[in-house]
Length: 112
Length: 113
Image 1 (cartoon, rainbow over the protein chains, first blue to last red):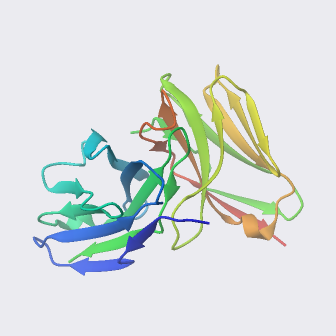
Image 2: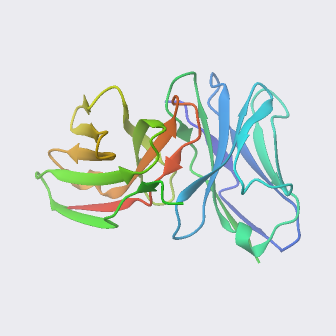
């Protein structure tokens, strides 16, 4: 069964550094998402992406965040200058039209 | 943000018995509800969903019930199996399945052999 793939599984970075989280959505999916879960808290929506542009974003998704689909298969989340509070599990998800989200296994980001 | 709440952080059930997981929501604009299961070190896995035009949806051992007037939904698992032990998240969205999901805090289900 096809799945959403995320790399790396764990990323450690220093405060202030840029980090790029990578995702390969399921190949025939058209809608792409990033969610995050801070330890002990809820899974929170960050951004949705369709037709090469952001369709929705949350308050969390400020100017430090950006997303890109650089080619036909990858979908990336960049954090320009990481803060301690960015430490979380970041989940990529994708879906077809009118179907539920399929999530990847996440990237654990640790900012020190 | 408490638009979707799962009031029970954990639930323990004997194998073979019914597991009932509950979820409450406050936003009247939600019209699509989903349950996801999550194992440690994995992402959420879709289980079952229900549209607001229905009050019940069944898929094998899993049934979701929706009470719109009470803004309450529940997931029934019967019979429960040890492999069902995981964290279960309720999620809701507006207009259609594509809009952003708002998640509950999760309920950890433990099914004892």
